[in-house]
Length: 271
Image (cartoon, rainbow, N blue to C red; front, side, top):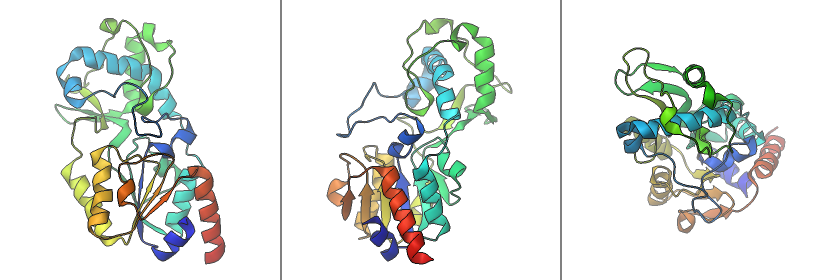
């Protein structure tokens, strides 16, 4: 099915979600019915307004971030990079913030929700690598540095502790609030990023969604727009999605093996 789809629409726009990275050891948010597996992630307004929320976030991140930091692309990431290089994918948009598509060699990539490996000051705009912020957190909070907890999505961890004792890192330039350069729940994706994706979709002949339930509107809107433009929509994922009724094709299969077979078949047919 995927082979025929990409042969018919070789300038496809691909939208990926958390299901792409579970094979790299990064947990996802939802089950196969689209329901939350755990409590919802931190909300943008709560993070900005509450020092206590920031203490909790950065303390849990001290435990959870190394899982994302050390994660490596799985075969699905490499296969999408191959398909781009062979000319079957025109643009890749990911809802993930782990940068694994880029590590695997994908070039035409847009990080819809930002990137977790950089931190930005919400006051002066200064940036630093997340690894630098993490090191400062560990140095300032030695009692938290050796704690263990189950990893949660996007560098979080299921950690319970006395967060009131956690020393939150501030901007070294102005003392402002530091935040990972990602779109937290309750915040908006930058307009120029959304517009660039709509433009890419308009220039593409089809949309393929991989590993996403599309329960979050920021990704679902592109499936809806493809439907409005009467463009074929193929969804590859295991479980329910918000766009099932809009899909031209729905493939419920394991992602890594499906993409591997597809890339191998297309490479054989092409060369």
